[in-house]
Amino acid sequence: MKVVSEISELKKIIQEWKQQKETLGFCPTMGTLHAGHMDLVHHSKKQCTKTIVSIFINPTQFNDPKDFEAYPNNTEADLKLCEENGVDLVFLPSVGVMYPKTETPIQMSIPSLQKTLCGRTRPGHFEGVLQIVSKLFHLTEADYGFFGLKDYQQFRVISSLVDELNFPMKIVGVPTKREDDGLAMSSRNLRLSKKDRETATLIPRMFQLAKKTLLGGEKNITVWKEILSDFLLTGTNIKIDYLEVVHPITLQPITELKGNVLLATAVFVGEVRLIDNEIFVCPE
Ligand code: AMP
Image (cartoon, rainbow, N blue to C red; front, top):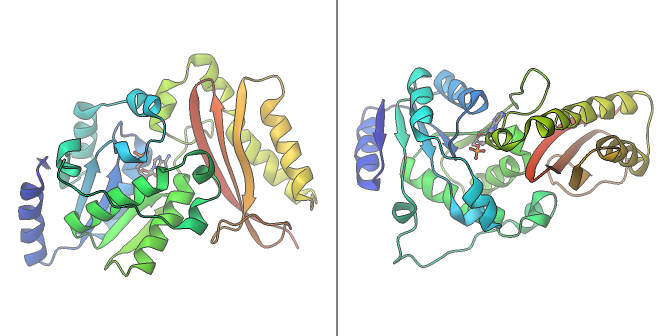
């Protein structure tokens, strides 16, 4: 496995692989890697001949500096996991490499997809995501980009970027990998206290309840959301950032429980912000 930190080193390897007609799969990450990230790698390895992982905690996508500072960092273990899972190349740039001081800042946004869900309470987040993935897509010249559906809004924003701006690549969404108790795997889970980790299991259980009530005939979105938020909040230290029902493609709020709907949530368990989502097919 090759590990490089400089753009010139990365480009040299990419050029060679392009000449050899390799198919390049790319999995961008912020490190502290877990089995969810490795699922992206496994999808890439099935579809592509070379798999690239980037590990970069991107400062421009953190609207809260405290969140950026608290973000875990685990390079040694990350590289070991990548090696064990057959990654071909890890790109591990510094902030100075990705954002040289001479750079003129560019701001990108896809307003309709960004003004809902996480975009509402994390101003600037998706602008930062669009900026970093655009740079990384160009640097890696990837044929495929693999993204987790856990970050569903991110997946939609990036899919739209690639479609609308004709990036010569395909975006693949990878299903959410979960712990045995259903909690979506996340680097942030490490920051949960033992008690908060237990409380966090209410999130996947809330999605089970959502399914049960929907199959039980609930048709009213407001009532549905109330049942679910009560379930999360009663007797817990959970704070709901949002609990929304939106169209899975446009991410716009919907008024009827009809067809495919995306139920998405972000909650604070103690200090830690966790997100999860599921697409439901509403019964006729
Ligand atoms: P992050 O390091 O959190 O920025 O995540 C990097 C990539 O891994 C993103 O595409 C995430 O959606 C994906 N990812 C993170 N957690 C999971 C998970 N539990 N299951 C599947 N993909 C995930």
